[in-house]
Amino acid sequence: MSHAERTDTFAAVDLGSNSFHLLVARREHGELRVIDRIKEMVRLGGGLDAEGRLDPVVQERAFACLARFGQRLRGIPADNLRAVGTQTFRRMRNANAFLMIAETALGCSIDIIAGREEARLIYLGVTQGVPGHDQRRLVIDIGGGSTELVIGEGLQPLEMESLQYGCVSLTRQYFGEGKLSRKRWKKAVRSVKADLQELRLRYLDTGWETAIGSSGTIKAVEEICRRQGWVEKGITADALFLLRDRLLAFKRIDKVDLPGLSERRHPVIAGGLAILQACFQVLEIDKLKVSPYALREGVLHDLLGRLEHRDPRDTTVEAFMARYSVDREQVDRVKRAALTACDKIADGMFLRPVHRELLSWASDLHETGLCVSHSQYHHHSGYLVAHSDMPGFTRQEQGFLAALVRYHRRPV
Image (cartoon, rainbow, N blue to C red; front, top):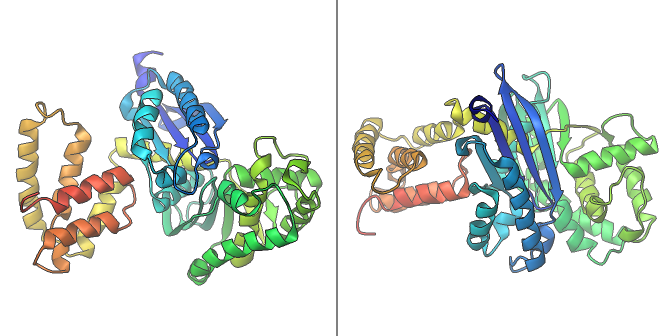
């Protein structure tokens, strides 16, 4: 690979609870052209117990996959790579220990993203392949450990939620012994509906013109329905009822034999289908279009936006400052002093550009707590930063930012 090819090559790694994905693309004439896709079914979420401990066998399977991904990523500049971990990483008790080995195997850092940030990136990815940018749309993504639901208009999300159910976790909870029955099915659907009720009115009031689904579960459901002759394209509410009845007739998951259902998707289809049917019923969906794009495409386009100075983190910080009526003149004075000091010690402290960025944003946000009280305002500022939704920031970045804001005054 030539130097020009390396600098114009970008990669996104999506470490989901069910599958790991690698997407490599090259920038040509101002657009990204995908040159490689790799997917491995790791089932990371299936190896996590109720205490957040990861099964050693699953852990080794994940490391082996990441090592293979790392070989493909060699030669691509570090600034052109981004890897994100989702729900299983968020629940993992020994996440830091796992990350140390995982990042070494992969050859780049892994960002653990919050559920709403995952939803934002999924929406960004799906919109890359949807015509009519001014159209309002609902996007549903059923992952292994969580389900994201986003309403947006054009490239802008309007409503974002992340449910703590995915095809792996729901299958394990309600169909864990491999048994299929109407009683188990009703319990599974009812539990998802209970969570969806909290957002139902808000989402229906916001409304949408088109509903779009992404993820392996939804693509598998569409393929099964198409093979059965129930749909030509997309998924309908009627087709879901037919598929539910066909699935439950097998009595056991290991007996399920449906054209279009792959061996890899087979063990988790029951939970995924139950989530999808609950979404259809609560949100009154008649038909769902299916997108081939998802989180990894969103990560890739978000990365490119950052490199082209269209960083969503800047937008988030700007909104924070406006919401809490920050004194911008004071902020600018503090920022200049902080960045000047940072530049003087950067080499000796082995600081990277991202550390300077975080210091700059911390300077912008350090007085947000004054909206609560002048007394101990740094505590309030730190709390607001730590516990607010901050689109664009990873959990690690948000934690680091909160620490800078919290400890900018008084003894540590």
